[in-house]
Amino acid sequence: MKCQNCGREVTNEDATFCPYCAKPIKVVVQKKRTAFPITAGVLAILSSCVAIGVGILAIYAALTESGYGWGYVNGVNLDYVVIGIFGLLAFSFGLSSGIIALLRNRKYIAFSIFGLSFMTAVGILIATQLWFLGLPMTILSILSVIFVAISKAEFS
Image (cartoon, rainbow, N blue to C red):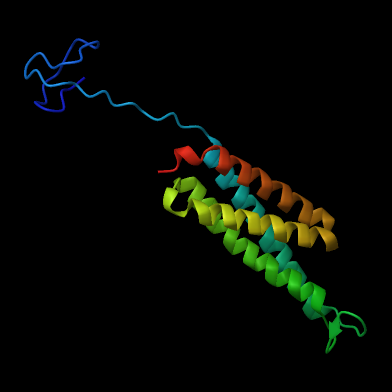
């Protein structure tokens, strides 16, 4: 190891003082890093991919399906429009939250947790209409929030 004061190589690994300049040797402790932030980021990005797919499919269905009655305005199904808009919003929150988790940026960790929580809520909303798409999105988002919360000490 090297002395931080004089820059000389200290061969004794147990030394607490430099034998050349007699200054204390500072031991640099490496933080233990886990794969939790990477896992959280990947899960958030996967969930956001589901969200963009749901959003596009819902808007497409709203534009192509026409009808009249409850839930329709001028022949457009408002349920699909709402799901589509929330799906697109969830995509943007999920993608940015996933990138923040991958970068381990402490400054934006609150936004990351908020974004993932928003995706969870949107997943639950979508699950009420399309359970086979909303359920995976909700599960991936919840797991991602858990992994970010467990590894928040690793964010710098």
